[in-house]
Image (cartoon, rainbow, N blue to C red):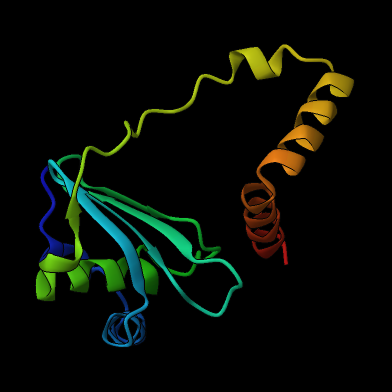
Length: 142
């Protein structure tokens, strides 16, 4: 299913559309990249970490790391769609990583103790990743 950006925007509630366009106009779309029908970007918002957005036009799918669940499209996805339509020059062309799920098999085989040690090591070596994950996780359950 091929998706057009205009069709994606048409799915958004009017308020979400306005807020997403405002984000785009205020320069909130950062680190934007494009490759073969896929768009990826980080969108700054009220959270301490930018939200991660991916739009896959070829597969007709999109996702955002924000906790929005009140409609099919959040303001961050709208902002990236507007950016792609209105300012395509901000998207660098680069090979994007595959959007296939990560093989969790080896991690799921770890004992609880080993898994906790892994997470502590990750926190020491890549604290920004774990902090962003923890913040987004808390947002989903508030």
